[in-house]
Length: 353
Image (cartoon, rainbow, N blue to C red; front, side, top):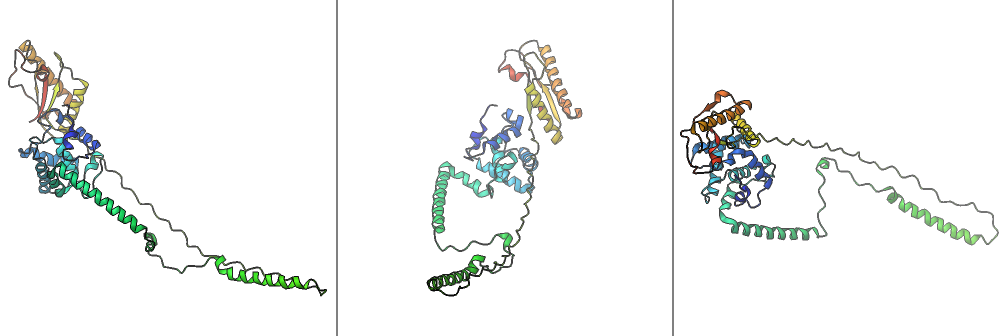
């Protein structure tokens, strides 16, 4: 089914993550190939139970009570009440967003999730959402301008000490070596200047030689104690959880070429995905083969049987127990002018039993 699933999702989440939508489409797999299985039927309790057990619990890993999970599914249904049909991709996206599980599909979870308030806000429509977004933008700009003006005030309080230094004992600040000895150096310089002045005046008269007066060298400044550097241990990073394997919904249809019972590569992959779903949920399935409406009726019936057997053999090769497969003859095989394209007539159906 060629369909742009993102269009329907963005009716409810305008900025929906394309990567998450694509990952959900891959997760749904062959369920989207059939119109009925691509929709979530809110009138069938068994369908809603599968959404809760297979998607919320197994795929998203939710551990809430059944009542809480059923309530979330119902809220998504109320949010999509304007649509006569409810696309499976859209329902799964809204549930993942509600429980902050977009990261399971490679997206980014919003702090606080969507929750009941945001689901109720979805009923406001696109116009009200745009008004709220505009008001939020104006408020953010006002807060940013106010914060900028606060940071320009000169007498801001001193910054708080870092967390790793708050327990340390406060010590009085030491003056540097030069600052401690500066008054002494200035005094010695003044004495030297006075000595030079008087000695220069007395050099014109013959007197006994005067011993040279030199300023005393300043004593070495005491070393300043330096606190040892503190080592901050690195914070361990938790590994990213690996998303569980996709669960494919049934029924699934395998199509064949005219007059052939050979399985194409694309349909082979479809059968392998169906086999994974059957094994994971321990399902029992029925296989029914159909063929063209035109041509020799006995030969067509034999060809339909061969196609059904080919699909059965491929499922068994993929690990499905033969005891879980039931070969079911079609209720009627039409013969005569085709009322619809023969491609749908040349199919094998895999359905739950």
